Image 1 (cartoon, rainbow, N blue to C red):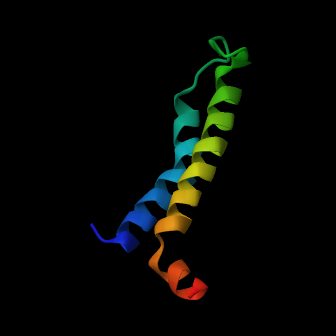
Image 2: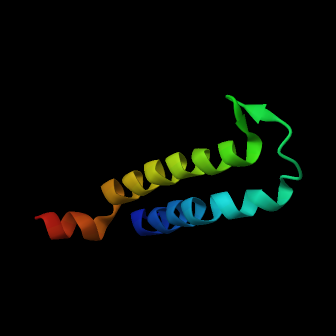
Image 3: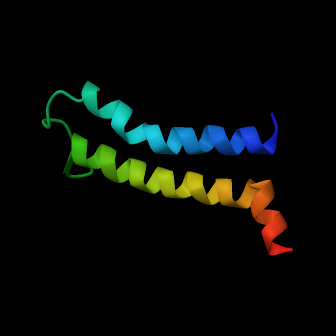
Length: 68
């Protein structure tokens, strides 16, 4: 897999991770780390999305060309 395809794949996962899981959450009853599950899911994907975009920035070939 080329770096460019990996960047697109990670960006796709970061973008669609949060909204695709929300329809499967039917109630706010289960608590994770003291948060209702829906709120935990959103916070988790904000952190995961930030991490994924950091990885994309590090491996993106066009970003390397701009720095040089």
